[in-house]
Image (tube, rainbow, N blue to C red):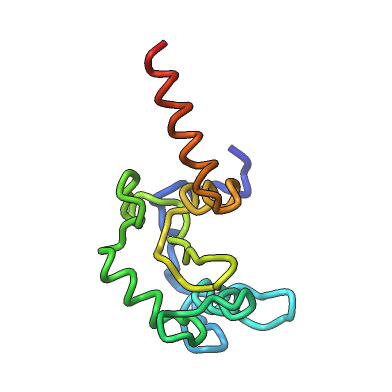
Length: 141
């Protein structure tokens, strides 16, 4: 393991003992400096990305951290794909706000793998069904 990553294994929280608590520009704890030189935390970065992409909630307004939190509670912190159903605690990254790329409407929270799979298939249901049938055919060999 590279020495720069020592102590940052999955499930390990580095000690902040003796360090002054630092906050992002919105008052959240834990931040990193962005390209713009501003202090940004993961919450702020995700919210800025949702605004940039133009993800809309069910009311047609810009998707926010409040919408994310509501969906997280409804889904009980799990991937919306019932076949996956992984909880946030089992994942290396935060759940993703999945959205329709044409209407921009939010659909649900997915794990990174499920979200990327839909994206790689260009949200085409026929491609995804074809892959399911393909995998089903392989089981009979």
